[in-house]
Image 1 (tube, rainbow, N blue to C red):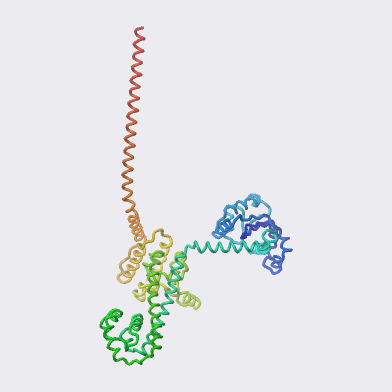
Image 2: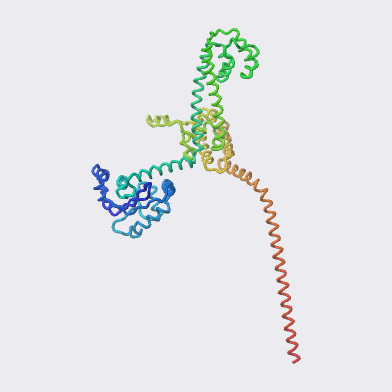
Amino acid sequence: KMGGDFVLFEAASGYALVEVVEFEEIGSSTEQMQQTVADLQRFSRLVKLKAFYPFESAEQALANINAISEHMVPDELKTFLEMQLPDVKKAKKGAAKITLGLIDPLFASAIQEATEFPCRSDDTVREVLRGVRLHLTHFVKELDNGNMEQAQLGLGHSYSRCKVKFNPGREDNMIIQAICLLDQLDKDVNTFAMRVREWYSYHFPELIRLVSDNYTFAKCAEFIGDRTTFTEDKVAALGEITMDPDVAAQVYKAAQHSMGMDCSPIDMTNIMAFTQRMVKLAEYRRQLAEYLASKMSTVAPNLGTLVGDMVAARLISKAGSLVSLAKCPASTVQILGAEKALFRALKKKGNTPKYGLIYHSTFIGRAATKNKGRISRYLANKCAIAARIDSFIDDPTTAYGESLRDQVEERLAFYDNGKAPKKNIDVMTAVSKALAVERGGAAAAGGEAAAGAGKKEKKDKKRKADDDAGAAEDKSAKKEKKEKKEKKEKKAKKEKA
């Protein structure tokens, strides 16, 4: 039985310390006991309210809930527990060991460390706290008449607003959304480009053979429009679009003898409208790629330098955030994005995948078939290092990413010619020293002036000290001389007498 123990309930309006008079631990999960918890009359005989500490303001409630979510013990809670709970020594030496029950095991460990009072967190405690939460307005009458719901709503809004406002991964969220949109745009632009090629080819089929690039084809179709209105004076402008005057001349020649059908004005208007939409979408896709590159240069410069901005952004998106990616071991980074293949291999007891998203890196494509698994493992190791550096470094720099990329290049060369690459610790130490020298360069200029002023000040102090010492010596010497003279005079008077 659970008797004489205490449980702590963290409500939106304050802390409720409840003493458990008697509660059956063995049958706590049975249906009969759950009915007892739900029934106010029976549950009120099992527990009684020891004390309630109300929050004085919404700011205090928010500060306390933020501390609890980080598994920290607020000062108010610590003082409240020390005042209301029995003495720790008595609790430990008593015949029946008294404990404090909490719903979160990590928070229970934090309270036990702060107050040295024995804490627990198990199914029995959770069942008791479920009843306390259900009947809290009966124990604390002031929370009735909708006051508890109002406090919960206000604290919920404040806590959510605080979490969103001070989210450390908000920059990561921008990258995640950008790369997801970029992948979607790639699919959509390709689909729309194929539709433009097929639709406009009814009118001008020869253009497909002369212009192969989808975006350039759409730009040419938008510029030409109805081929019958395409005159020779427009060839120069078309050459700027195709970036090849010869191709523009061939397009003009083909337009004069095209086999395509004639389109009515309404048909051509719809074709041109869709073509313009596709061109604007492709231009926006390019702008989004530039935006993503600029974000990656500030959030994860080393990871982007190592494997490219697109692959690095996909890794961050798959992990959820840069911090989550930094926490992943290299083996997880290696197969990130190949979860389906991994679990299928584990289920069928086949070969597990060698790479996931990092397959899109150029390093794996350049490696020989027999070395693809080895280089992917090595590259995943370097990606994990780069992610941790980007996550915890104070001043963003690409120096580490460049060094890691050189190491992967050396490893590729090692697989081909057997030349041993540099050790990672030597490379990282060299980069760290180089960055320290760069940072110290600016400080050195100001430091030299400060050092010069300091030396001059030290010299002045030393000179002054020497002068003071010399003056003191002269004074003491004069005093000794005077005393000797006085002694001689006294001796001479005595002899005369």
